[in-house]
Amino acid sequence: MTEDLDLTWEVTEDPDPESSKKVDEGLHSFNLGSAPLSESKSMACFVRKEGQIIGGAVGRRWGKGAELQQIWVHADHRGRGHGGRLMDMFEGHARESGCEWVLLDTYSFQAPDFYRRRRYETVATFTGFPDGIERYYMMKQLGA
Image (cartoon, rainbow, N blue to C red; front, side):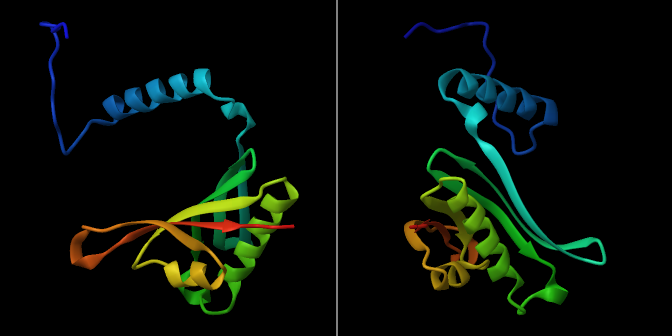
């Protein structure tokens, strides 16, 4: 391995936004040249009250799969089935768009039981977070 003598290396817990942006842009450029990412489509479902968003499910679809990246319902409106309805809408749109499965990740303090009740299966679990917190990667086959 040849050593580049003019390089500097650093580790930081407080990266400046421009440096992080440069890495993001570099990876994005590489990815665009390596895969048909233009086929990836954003997806979102929202519930509003008096014009204000009180919940939403945000993600994307690509090929036969969809990824739920975020779901949230305002604390004043939880426990009324809004999260389940948002999931139904998200999964339904994914299915209608040709997706066969949905992938998501969640922490143990978030909603893993909610997803399990919706027939999501844990495909990987990561431990070692503070206070015994775990991170789950979950998947659901959508079927016909």
